[in-house]
Amino acid sequence: MVYQHHRNGLCYEIVDRNGFDATLDREIVVYRPLYPSKYRSFTRTPEDFFGEVSPGVPRFAEVP
Image (cartoon, rainbow, N blue to C red; front, side, top):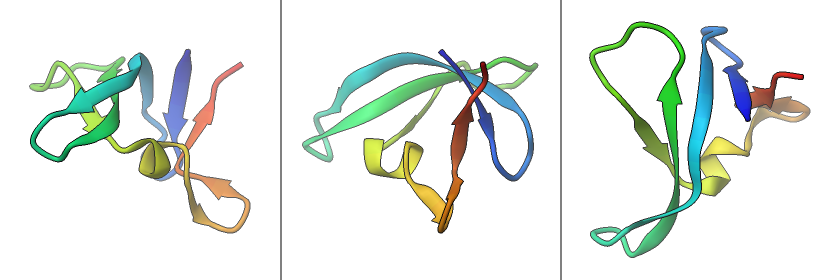
């Protein structure tokens, strides 16, 4: 699944929706940029990745 970030318009692909951060002891979403980047992947909590930045505005919107 590909998602677009609300602010920068860049696209990302979810690598794993059910990752786990042992240091934080919580689930994480692992996603990779679909643009040139010095980073191969990023992580966020599911609440942060799938949450809203303001009412009705998702942080990441799925690209059809």
